[in-house]
Image (cartoon, rainbow, N blue to C red; front, side, top):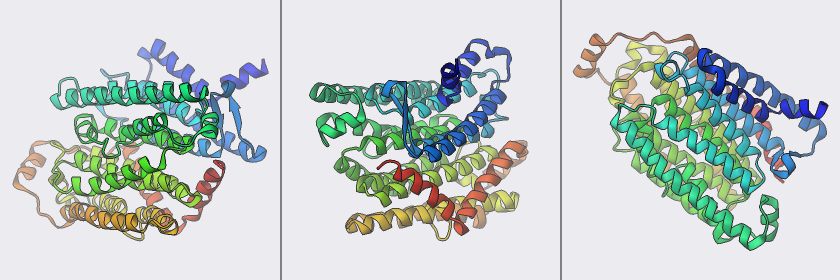
Length: 465
């Protein structure tokens, strides 16, 4: 009886039971409130697991070697839960999260569940099933706007390229199993370090991270999907894929090449964009390049720097997408932020600080993450790549500073003035206000007290060795 109770109180099992219950009986219930409550409970459970881990100080595994827990996995789960709760808060008063699309909160719960299962997986079978559960759910969420041509195009592109990515992953797993007879990550890593199968798996995961040259789906999908779903695509699934990519020990040369291409493509591709979500898509590609650079170096310091970068990237992304959603743009154009400092000084300042942090302007949190990645690169002798990364960051800073210039120093365009007159101004909801305030506090808090984040990431990274 105690063993059954212990299994049911596992975060993944509890979340699975809640999802199944909501699918079967949740039609007359408030799925959004239940989803937020369940994720809060699971976040508390993961915190207790963290305490239990530090008391035992050794990794334990469940499900006959398919799932495992250590400090790295627990921290990754915590980021996923916080990100999922933030997204549900972000959409608390949006039509896409309530009727007639009552299923949206449940689908976000399924994405959170699949991400939790993914970061815990230590077997290629469980990894593949978790990735497929995540991808199939994101197919549905991406194409929620059925009356929009952009939404249909986004759903179709994500479906086709997601299927190609899954096919590559499965083919790579088949090659590895045929060569070694093993399905566990540790068993295969002990027998070989690089193989065609492992290269295919690495490429498949880079597809999910929208790393160049496998980034072609990202701008169109970000533009066509609803803003909340774009925020979901940019944060929660990427945390899961990043976590498992570090754990499987990818082919470093492939990751390094993709990191360089992503940094360059993310900087140059966004220069001529006129729509805010396409700009953020290219920005995300550039950030993934920095994170992959840390993974490719594969030293203790670089892995820790990549985890710090991912945490700060999630915080900044949630803040920027919440503000964009609250401003309710009509065409999602960059020029729609012009004059924001006069219309709403607090939101204007917050958005400006967020964009400057994303650009890596010191002393904001984004500078800390970029500096740690470049420091680990220089320490390991990657001088040329670090120079390319610095130049690309300067180029990328141009469009972030341009956004800040629009917020503070650009007069309103006449067409925007008429839009503000004709459209009723939306009041900022309490949930979005709390989310914007909380993320801005974290961005500013990390300027003065980075030691807390450094200690957590150090404990997480050391559990990988």
